[in-house]
Image 1 (tube, one colour):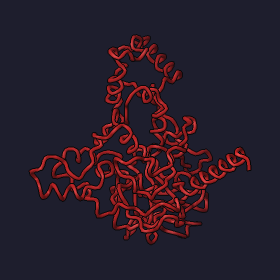
Image 2 (tube, one colour):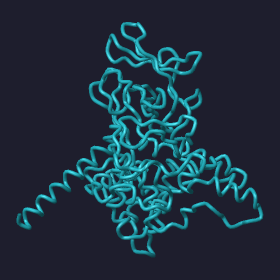
Image 3 (tube, helix red, strand yellow):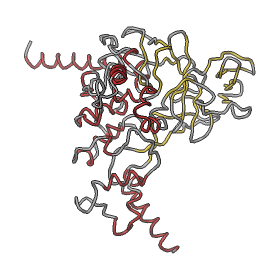
Image 4 (cartoon, one colour):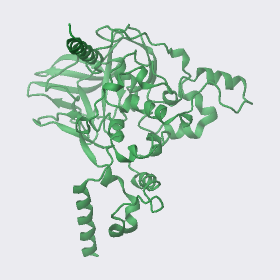
Length: 415
């Protein structure tokens, strides 16, 4: 066999292996890498965010108001944002099939009816999503979690079918460990890698993205400092403020880096680790046109000149402890920290717009765009509705520049 043929054959084998890894690691399909090791981190390694209050109350009080902290929780009257009131608790798939969201003695349920006869009822057990954009819901079946067919869509303030579902009742979508890795701090996985459907210990879950998702398991930290209150140097804990740029970016990219192909068990990655040791990061999509505004903020940011021409990280603009949603002026001041007269990177529209330009860089350079991943079908609709989210592909959008200037001119005429 010639060297050329051997090379082509090797390339084909590598390509086939890569494709196989892709198939085995897709999150929502419930498939996993067969060779991945069992999770090394244990539930007992975690202290829970409530243990942080005695020393870090101000930060804790801020963080519990964030979308991260509220990204999942046990389902309850307070955590479920959709209505159970008659007239607002239904979703009709067709004249014969409907879903009702009902409060019963044993909890809240999604109930399927065919010609007004109950066919199946499953309880709301877990709420996923802070309701900033919406919420979806999970139910336990033994040690397995499944997604319920109906989701709450905040922008519409109504129940819709769950994202990616066909226009029919579906109770059978299993939830994988990789899905939970980005909506919880930790879940103890019971099943070995390679099984068809993941199993979990429902009593060993840390809901939401809390302190330990970014600072690492803190049981040792809490135990040590409880026993040594005089010690002011933090021990047995990770501080992301001390990370290198790559470590900081990898921590955020774990859940904001697109659909990563995992090469190790979910929840193996810990703050400070290299993402490439747990995921096939070299095979990530680098084409901006193929990136979704939901879930791949890092990929979009990485393609931006702001990123490539600086040493910025996600924390350059985001305060991970605070809820700053909608505070465009706050974010704009962080833009101006780099884009100012001193650094000769000022906005070229400054003279046309005036001081107001300092209040909103975001709408021009990070506009809201429709997500292709968060798409729901409203009752009776034939065309899906997408959630809008801000792109992290920071650049000049000529059509938006024109709109801004037209608005300014109109305001000048009115004044």
